[in-house]
Image (tube, rainbow, N blue to C red; front, side):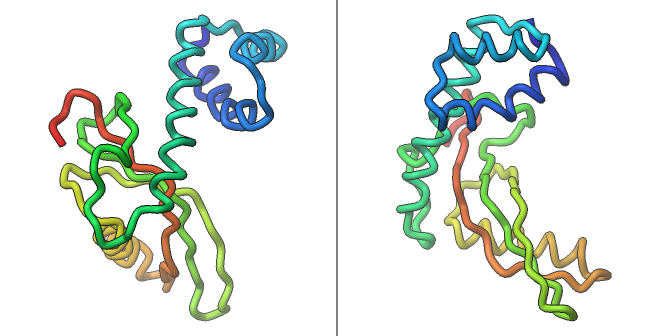
Length: 154
């Protein structure tokens, strides 16, 4: 059974395994090769979550940024935080002094269903507050997924 950090580390490899066409059994064998065992039921749950993420990603990319998303655009999941929504994407930053730009993964949690533009503005405001000293700007966010916390109302 994979627990704690070992499972978290192995979960980071699951999207790559799925893209390369690995079956669940092949992933379990790979986990054993890494020196850890993984319960089949846990692996199936983790794989389903990432498969849902991929389906959700293609839907979110077609979403008009000024429209509040319906549940069709969302992946149902069990979030560790007591929030209704988690939004994933890649955020591009710029250093205005050097002109250097870089992109990093991002996620934000919210209890209010909003448009992608509204979530982007909220995140930009948060970054502006935290990064003001460093003079870092947000160029934009490429949204990839919207997750809804199972058990919470929309």
